[in-house]
Amino acid sequence: MLDAVVVGAGPNGLTAAVELARRGFSVALFEAKDTVGGGARTEELTLPGFRHDPCSAAHPLGINSPAFRALPLERYGLEWLHPELPMAHPFPDGSAAVLARSVAETAASFGPRDAGTYRRLVEPFLPKWDTLARDFMSLPLTALPRDPVTLARFGLAGLPPATLLLRRFRDEPARTLFAGLVAHVMAPLSGFATGAVGLVFALAAHARGWPVARGGSQALSDALAAYLKDLGGVIHTDYEVKRLDDLPPARSYVFDTSPTALARIAGFGTYYQDYRYGPGVFKVDYALDGPVPWTAPAARRAGTVQIGADSTEIGTALRAASREGRAPDRPFMITVQPGVADPSRAPEGKQVFWAYAHVPNGWTGDLTDVMERQLERYAPGFRDRVLARATAGPAELAARNANYVGGDIGTGAVSGLQTLLRPKLSLSPYRTPHPAVFICSSATPPGPGVHGMSGHNAAKAVWRRLRQT
Image (cartoon, rainbow, N blue to C red; front, side, top):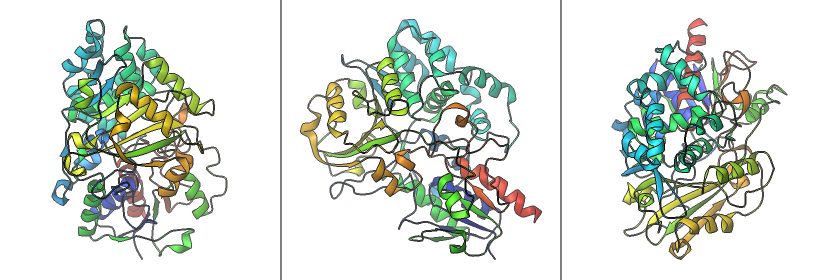
């Protein structure tokens, strides 16, 4: 009998399997698709030689993850590549605010009235970032905080809605960039703990950047899989699990799935019926005949580029998708241009590029034209560079990755108490009604992102039980 069976080979499932195998437990992992990866895959979606990341492409949480940093992933081929600027936020007049590795450069891009405010906001946390990241991403109490005082100070700054934090800034560049950071998790700016979301992304950039993986995000998943195999773990792909009886006997079962799927497979009935999914996204992957023709010079040097004219436009777009049930007329967009740091993603002189916008959960329309009109505001002539495009709305995204219910790439709404207390109100969120069944997906703390910490935290709960039985 196996010690642990893991279902789902996304970053969290792979990390949970690795953590258990590192501690001497026998582990088998089962994945429905023909390759491992989940939200960290790489495919030729458009033309031969153009390597696209269907979901996550830039990895501020990956390079800062306490779980990944403790693993020898570089030995298995993972190499982080850094653009000159982690992120830029251009404006229609050709200027831009930037999130640079340097706090001073970032603050200077906001203008003199907000530079000092930004420095005072982030600089107290940076010297203690590694400890803070571990404490923050280990919530709830899978481990006692190593620095409870700094964590409490971070909570005072981050737990209130982002709208309150934005009031500290006097001018629009700082407000807009920070509002965009919060929108990465598709959360309304007025939501609980949304200030913490923006702070984490900013601090991650200053600490270690927003890199891409050489060759594509698949490199991270492949490194985790190779390490797992070296530890004695076994991976089965093309193996869809519909019920627990489809799996071999084991002392524990760990699911990197949505709560909905887990309830169906394990027969939990309505146990997760109150769990809410958030807005979906509409995503377009592009093969381009050259770089994106950004008007703002800073955007040409950045790996990630946020698109939104001001904080009001961003807030309006988020409300449309999350509360009003409609696609925004001027969507907030997150775009990534991996070729700025990794030219190997496309043939010489060409570029891969992706962009996504928020839409209501399960939305069935086509946002391509609206998104490209928005891009043309900041990069005139963009459409002339398009060689091919691959579009994916909520249905297509959910078909590629079953965890993206209704196109929600965060596997659950980041709003209200569910921001921190997910998927149930519990001090042991990785446990389920069955004592041998656990959940480790992004539906559990610390939530969305390619960081592996949900799998790491769940593995702790699993090995504690295995030692007791």
